[in-house]
Amino acid sequence: MGVQLMVYVYLAVCASMILFNCACIIQFKKKDQESSYRDNKVKNEVRKQIELIEKGGSVSKEHVDWLAKKSRRVGNFASMDEELDRLSEDHREAVDEYIRQIPRVFIQLAFSINKKDSIQQAHYAYMIKKYGILANYPTSSLSEAMLSLVSSSNLYCRENALEAIYSSGNADLVCDALLKLSDSGYFHHEKLISEGLMSFKGDRKLLMDLLIADFEKFNVDMQNNILGFIRFGKGRYDEFFFDILKDDSRDDELRFSALRYFARYKYDPAYDYIIYWAENPQLQRWEYASISVSALAAYPCERSVEALKGALSNSNWYIRKNAAENIEKLNLPYAELAEIYDGRDRYAREILQYEDELKNIREEAKAQKGNS
Image 1: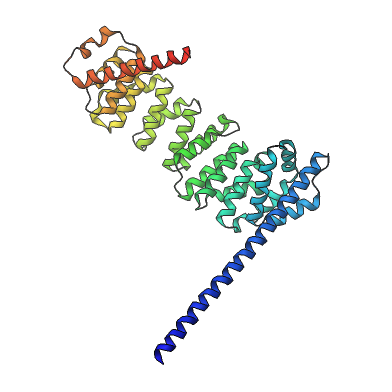
Image 2 (image 1 turned 90 degrees about the horizontal axis):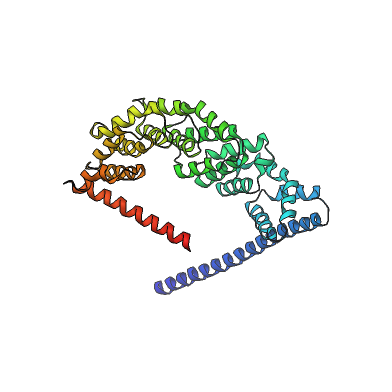
């Protein structure tokens, strides 16, 4: 009897599992059908408005109201984006006009975006950037919504919000966003920030001025990103960078960035520091000597040449490599380097020969490209 009972219980459990699986399949299929219906509904409505615009009409108020309500669901928002992408291939002008006539949909959603999950927040910020909403309709609600997402714990939310802010062309808003990101404490890769700042569409000079004015409010990582942006963005702030270079209390990475700046932009007062670190590599971290050596080509003189020749014998490969590269840049005659080529220092001789071979390879590649 006991064995039969166990068999019956086992059969009951199996039957329950089968019924449960069947119920799940039916439920999932029903949800897929409902989702497909909603997606098609949104796409059809968007398509009708595009057709209306192409006939010389305008987007109806009813459609904007309906879309604003439906866009509260991430699936509907994604469906609209997908349909607009598809229509853009053959109806670019009509799609652009459609976007210009529905900014209220994005603005209205800004008031409640913080209550949404991170997926919808990230997608919302992505669409704000993609369709230039913040650039063309710079309302306070949109700006505040993007700023709030900048301090999100979700990387995609932060990056999409930052990209939307960069595309706005508003220097004050970008500065506020970077301050908020700096204060949040979340790690955001320097490459993302540097590329984002370089993509800024507005007045770069104004943005650089604002970032320098608030420089001490940022954490060290963000300060380093700002210095890199100014350097690559061709901003000239010699005295500002010089103050960082000579300040012993500054983080080493900031001083390295200042050194790289003076390797790109010649500034005579900085030479004393550059030549000191190049001639005395043992007194500081090796990066000071390595970067200083790479800067000496911008300050051609007999002392710089002697410092470069001395750096060729350094035990650090990076210092030797930078010295050889800059000697090549100075195009020194063979007689000037004969003591190294004919000398006993194998490492100095080989690094110069290595750079000579690289130079020849580049010239040959350039010549072949010109002939083809």
